[in-house]
Amino acid sequence: MQPIILYDTPCKLPKKQWAPNPSKTRFCLGHKGLPYEVVWVEFCDIAATMKGIGASPTAGERYTVPVIKDPNTGAVVSDSHAIAKYLDETYPDKALIPHGTHVLVETFEILFINKVMIPSFKLLAVRTLEIQNDISRGMFIESRLKMFRETRWEDMAPEGKAQEMWAALKKGLGVVDGWYQKSGGRWIMGNAFSFADIVVASWVAWWNTILNEQERQEVHALHGGRWTRLLADVNAECNTDLGTFEEHSHSVS
Image 1 (cartoon, rainbow, N blue to C red):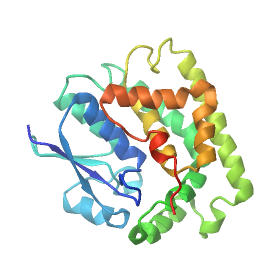
Image 2: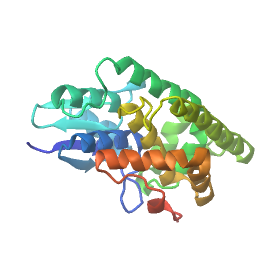
Image 3: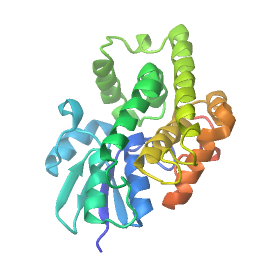
Image 4: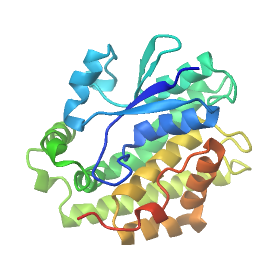
């Protein structure tokens, strides 16, 4: 089998990877044991590169990563959820989305984003800018100001609002922790591992990359260490090593 090509976007950290959605695809490929190669595309070059390989735009008609190009079938697939579905259909061993649960998994992801991510996205965008390569900083700022309908970067997460956003993220995680408590197992579907757990682990891996030391330690301690444990469990399930707390226990200059 020829390696699947994964398009991802780099940052200035040594391992380069940071973006949560490509992490979802890395976990998926690892879980299925599929070989892949990474093509790094600077944030400022994503649209042109994706158009060039025939990838489809995703939500809001934006060109994003991850995208995979499968030389074994000729398929080019955009969007992490669509990629997971494609991988299950094409390489059915070790399903990512158990039969009959596609709508449930998709709904879980939407609810997680609404509860945890949307209230804190501006703060996380500000943190993410700090690790962007210089060549992509301008495009990153422009795209996020447009996304959040702001005109000035300093208005994204001023100190008072930043504290409110951070509190909202932790409050949202408390809701998700309640869901996991009701699952009856270590995964959101009890004893059945799925793409839903990959979704959560990918966001946690992103936070470990962009948050400062104090913020990382707060997440580490929340809910009896659930989020650190979940990330470790997903890494073990997928034979990966993404976004560990120890890996990013340093500041970026």
